[in-house]
Image (cartoon, rainbow, N blue to C red):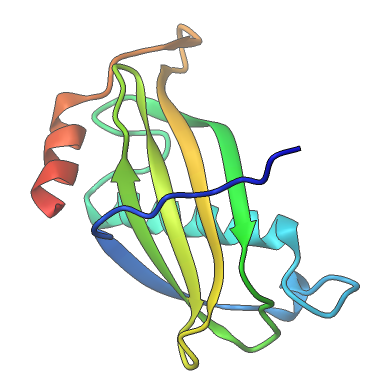
Length: 143
């Protein structure tokens, strides 16, 4: 199996800090993969909130995650303060990618790179819909 290689964008448009909680630690004594996915979910939501949206309301349309990839770089431990940088890239007609870089805020050591693909969906019709133009414009203005 070939390894996931996440390409970083030229610029991250948002950053937030999230501490690693004791519940994020797995049996190996470090940040668990399930918790890392939850942390990037939180970072995505914070970016959306920052620009006036929620996952269920981006210009009246919802979003749904269609794929995810994580590339681990080093361990994260209880009490580490994560700096999560977020970019929105690779727009298609119905979606885009969110790219994340997670680092230890104090040591600046890279913990992981991640990418989630999202599509826009009309939950009533259960069908994908085009990317809302105003959302795309807001993201482009942040770049």
